[in-house]
Length: 73
Length: 217
Image 1 (cartoon, chains in turn orange, cyan):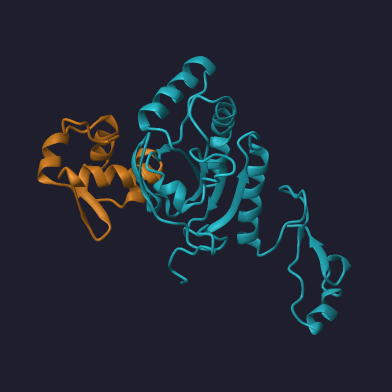
Image 2 (image 1 turned 90 degrees about the vertical axis):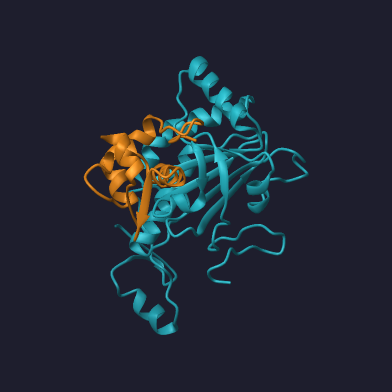
């Protein structure tokens, strides 16, 4: 997985996505604009981060979970 | 059938139909077709990794990648090789040919995606995918399909021209003539009624006759 390593820790791509959410929840398009990553990569990365409990989705926007917040602080 | 994937009697996707959905392992993680919504996508297949024509094509696709991005278009390759094989191949291309492959490649080992898209043509090869190109628009509709045999590498200028032509058609509601390239005159859609045909010659276009009128954009 490009955003989460086999040991469950975020990769550098994963950390880029997590760091982009430091100031609040964003849509995948906003994250793509902010990070410069292609939209398809952002969507797939967010799916991985969500499945490992690091981000949460609400109404199309993605934000850090409590677990995710501890990683970026 | 408007919202569902549309196929013809042979099971092949059709122009204007919804592109078949998939979730697949790629060199850049698990990707779904829906991950590309909002952008144009060129989904293309190649017969096998570590083969000569495919290598030249991958280098050529990489060289037009930035041009495609300017056109809001992504690339997604596919063959029935594994992710490990794809990774080994693109690392080899980077090391030996000094070209980085920037786009993801589907590892379609179980042929799930290639069967959905009709990429295997048994008269060419029972095990490998032929050289297909599917142009999928931001709404997931199939807008163009190209099928090349195993022996013939694709022409990147034609692929760029095809994207330019489709995007020009969408933006200006026009058609594009033979050998059209950006900047050339475009074809005004032909009149649908006798009355419109009568009026067409008075509308200021460059007309050979009522059914063949061109204009500059």
